[in-house]
Amino acid sequence: MSLDELRRRYPWPEEQPKGRGECSGWFAGANRTALQAAMQPGHKVIVELGSWEGLSARWFCENMPRGATLICIDHWEGSSEHHRRPDWAERLELLPLTFLDNLWEHRARVIPMRTTTLAGMDELASLKIVPDVLYVDAGHEEEFVLADVGKALELWGSEDTAILGDDWPHTSVRRGVVRAATRCKLLSVYGASCWEILKGEPGNRNPPLAKDNARGLGG
Image (cartoon, rainbow, N blue to C red; front, top):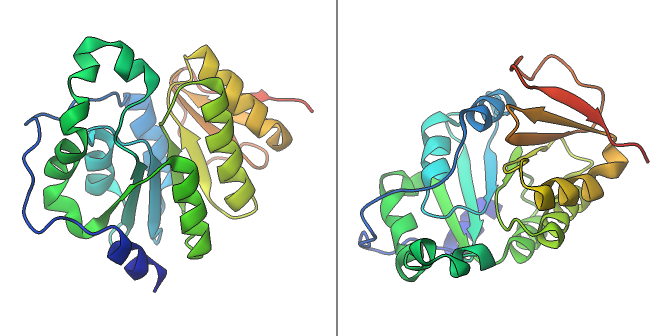
């Protein structure tokens, strides 16, 4: 099976590594609500682009459907903004080990792909792995977001893959998402933080949140 091959390519270490002993990150309540609605019984593959120290990955493991596998794609080298801030930069040396340490108890359900987001998605496609849910939370630069979302739509835009992401308040993220998703016409924004690309008219799957709105993209 393709997931078995992916596990073979990206194995866990034999012993639990020692990380920083903490699990920091950014994962708003609205994101959790939107993702909980996106994940359906019977879903088998959840993909996360950008995992940092594993805060959201642990939430996925505790909330995704029984039997599902979480694939985390991250080079674990940090982004440019992490390197610019001393309080974040000091975490980078142990970042890969911290993630593995934090997800150790869930290792049977998690495949940590240490590679770039674009290469990782291409590798999944080459193995004919189709995500049921794909969560974008990697680089914030407009061109990076455009590339990540564009690649996801190129590979799985015609599938039933739910494509959601974080950081809507960042202007660069908004621009990247909108540029990539123009052909889809609509975005749904949850609680001002989490966005989802809608491939048709908004339905009843998404829960009503105070600041939800569906936005026409034109084009």
